Length: 120
Image (cartoon, rainbow, N blue to C red; front, side, top):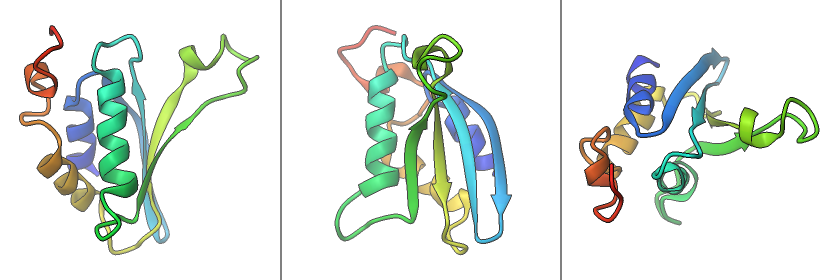
């Protein structure tokens, strides 16, 4: 889980909250600072790779938002978080990190590589 958590933590606007291993799978919970200029780029990239890279190359992972009810705790903007989840025993967090590393901007922590038109 360390490799995936390290990669996610290096991604602009992202912070890892927690992670876990379960029988037959794993999960990683993170926050994305929605006020960051690259927040939606990050959501789009993670969603693309982890949810539906292509019809032929679908990973056994899902990336999705989670939130308490909007009427509690100040609303979803304050408490919105995201989960990367996998229920396939053979697909490890290291493999997920490998797929992300191979498809997201390099180096992932360099904001200039994400979008040449966005100021850092």
